[in-house]
Length: 397
Ligand SMILES: Cc1ncc(COP(=O)(O)O)c(C=O)c1O
Image 1 (cartoon, rainbow, N blue to C red):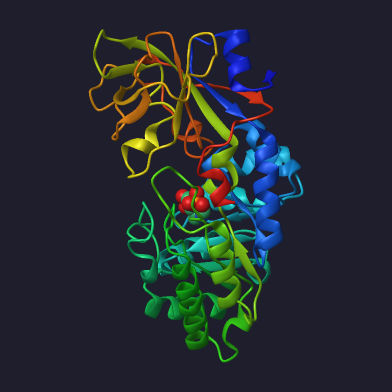
Image 2 (image 1 turned 120 degrees about the vertical axis):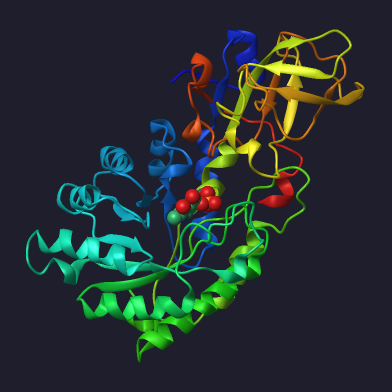
């Protein structure tokens, strides 16, 4: 992977014509350290947030050894980079083939379910293999964290999760069938209410108390999901320390191990997207760039937050601080009219065709979701030693 000292140096040396994701692995190390220092349990990582091999390697180098995987491809990816890793197959709906592959070929012993039907599916697959397997497999029941409603940009409870009153029965059923058991919830990505984690931890205790005489002590773990936010502009949300504090208080006397599986929070701030302006019409506030919602910026089409942005001239120089600025409408690289950023971007008024825009906090759900629509290749990835801080960075960490 080519590596540059900074984005301006990259522009000066390479003047890239295609979009580039610029990764600073050091930033991943810092985020992992933060979680490992302050989260009161084990930090695993949701691979779906960025399966680029260089990002996976940075996560492994930073010391993460436990992963949330959602497919056979993610299993293979992690086994390649970290053969001894502990994998949790936390997609609540799996194919029988993928369950068999996970158990047999990849040695996975931990699965999430949220229905008796998925339990049946696992029963059939497990029973077709060696005997005694049930007793070494943990089935983690995903419940709906009703407390989290409205706290994230994605509500993760519409698609998956069983209501708490049914979760106790499913826990009992799984235990009765001879499995180890756990509980999990996901409080919504880019969650903005630390207390929603605490409330859902209470719900988990309650579910376990209804299912087992010894309560949560009977569980292999409580996995509180991901959802930890990044400091996108305009969101004066609580810092990560508020989340760690709320979770630590709620889990201070928890009788089972606690796990989290952030995606965004470990990788988003490690990467900037460098795009080039393909066209600015004369005296017009529309900019046409060489990436867009069918590429690295897909998430911006669906959520109410947008990455921070700053401009460089075609030779890599920053625009002077006192340069007049205005709001631009940014259009993506395809012919589709949907391919635009939802919110205007404030940039120097003098910006023109051939200049560059850096979008920050682009290390999660960027290359992971990029398509080749219109025949346009997704952004490549290069290394950078430094990403200049965004104004909200300091407040956040
Ligand atoms: C089961 C599960 N865990 C963790 C995550 C990571 O969420 P986030 O990136 O908001 O931390 C996701 C995201 O889709 C998920 O589905």
